[in-house]
Each structure stands twice: as structure tokens, then as C-alpha cells.
Image (cartoon, rainbow, N blue to C red):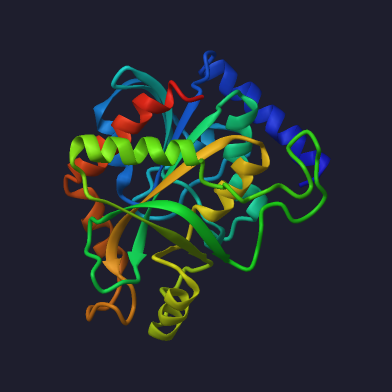
Length: 278
């Protein structure tokens, strides 16, 4: 990032302050098809990404591309209904730009969700996986370039990239609500083509449990700012070579859009606990 990026962050902050004067402390990022979670919200405002300076349009089906501000249960949040990705042709600085802005506006807790492929044969569509760690196979990093100390340190520690206290709170909610929740490692790849069977075998041998094309850049950027983050994957399909069926995006959307009540309950339960942790 350069000084010019800091100017852009400030400009986007000022625009959002006018629309949302009391900015929420909690941000929930919803991946492909998972925006239905926000149907339970008491909505104060909706803002399309292109209405905010330097935010980009989301071009992927299943990503509505808007911010939703309001209450989920008794907790006030900012919901990102969809994200944009490196594979859409945006730079890494553009991909993580919204999270930089939210952090500077005072957001302290982030919940990132995604749709992912399962690399184990005993996984099934709609399985939920709490991400404990990730492996970056994107060949890029949002921190490449000149570092600005006002964003964060040159070499941020990633030992606890996924906040342990947040993770324990999510597990507690899952136990209380009797939701089956796996734990695992997320492999972030570049995309947009799906993986080959040989690649999936390699990823599994390297320690991956789920694989997807997002999450890693934003988690790095959030940690760089010293903010706290947790992440949940919704398994939408078995990865190439694990299941017999060819992969397609319609399958991803089908697995997430058709009433995944357990996912919505888990998110709402954790959001209520997060408010007391930040």
C-alpha cells in the first residue's frame, strides 16, 4: 500500500460516517450464497458497494455486493453481503480495502464466512467447519509493497490468526445449539478454475481440510491491523477427485441458499457472544 491508499481509506471513511454515524463494532462477512443469514436482521441501512468511494462491485453470482447495517438479535452489526476476490481482476489492495476502512472506523471483531470444497471423503454438503488456521497458496499477499505503520507493523505475527477466544465461543454456541461443527485448516487458492484431483491430493497431504478462493487476504489484513477475527466454512461440495460429480458454481449456491438454518443459528449465537468479547 502507498500513501495514496491511506488517502482513499480516509475518503471512504468519511463517506461511510455520513451514512452510518454510529459505526458497528462487529463485521460479519458472508460468502457465496450465505447472504440469507441477514434476513433475520432488523435493518437500518443498506449501501451498495459502488456507492462508497473506492469500493468495487462484486461480479460473482451469489454475492449481492452491499453493506447491511442493523441488529442481528440484540447485537448491532455491519454485514457484508458478498465480497470481491483477487481472481475477479482486482488487486490485493482493492480486495482488502473494505476491511481496512472498517478497522479504521472502529470495528474490532470480524466474523468471516465462506463457501468451500471439502477435501475429505467423509465430508458432505452443508457441513460447517470452524477454521483454526490457513495455508496461503494464492501466490500473493495483501501486505506486499510499502508498509504504512499507521495500518500495522511490517511483519505481523500470524501465530493466532484466528482468535482463540472467538473460536472457543463459536464451539460453545455449537455445543449449546447441538450443531455439528468440524474444525480444520483452510487452503486459500487463486482460482477461478476449480482444483484438479492431483492438486486436491497435494493440498490434503499438506494439511488442508477445506479449500476456497477467498478469506486468506482479508484475515491477513485484519491481523495486520491488530483486530480480532474468526472464520467458518460451509462445505458446498466434495473437491475434485473426492466426489464423483463435476464441480460447478450452481452446486455451491444450492448448498448455501436453501435454508441452512444451522449456519444462521451459529452466526447469530456467536455474534451475541462476540459483543461481550471486544
